[in-house]
Length: 180
Image (cartoon, rainbow, N blue to C red; front, side, top):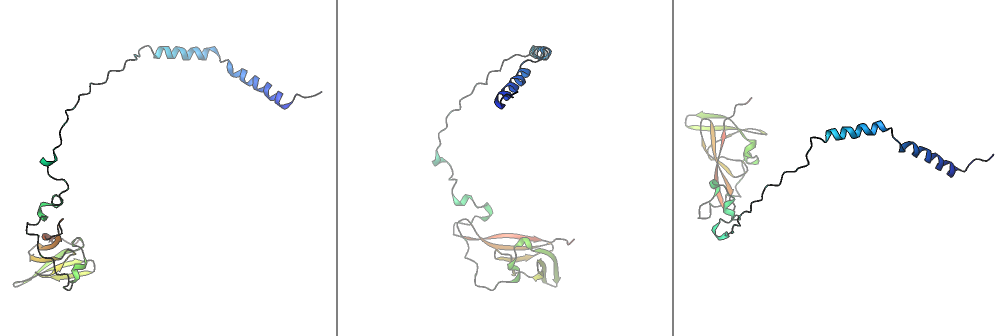
């Protein structure tokens, strides 16, 4: 007795498997068709029309009537704009630096005011310690100079450059903070 070859056996097996997939029970198909017909009864296939597009009138661009957006003077805040004279002379770059000029003003805190007669000093806390300052002392990284010491604040004038590289004065204050 001889057995059929492997390809012949595989093809016969494949025919039987496919034959089992072709016919589905009729009750399953009719149930689905009935459900689809019931679900589609209230549906309408109407899409509303798109709204009308209104054309915008063209506008003529007249650059000579407008302010120049690239003017460097427009970039500086009004408080920093220098007068037409060209600004102040540059700060003295050769003078010896004071200890508090190593720190930005954000790193410095006013911790107290000391008064003895007419003499007044402020105690400024820096990351490396506490320093006394008087009117005329320098602090901060923008050539800041103490111009007044009041009961709760120290008034400072910094020298900064505006957008046209002119030196101008910028007022800044350090306010008294309570240490927590």
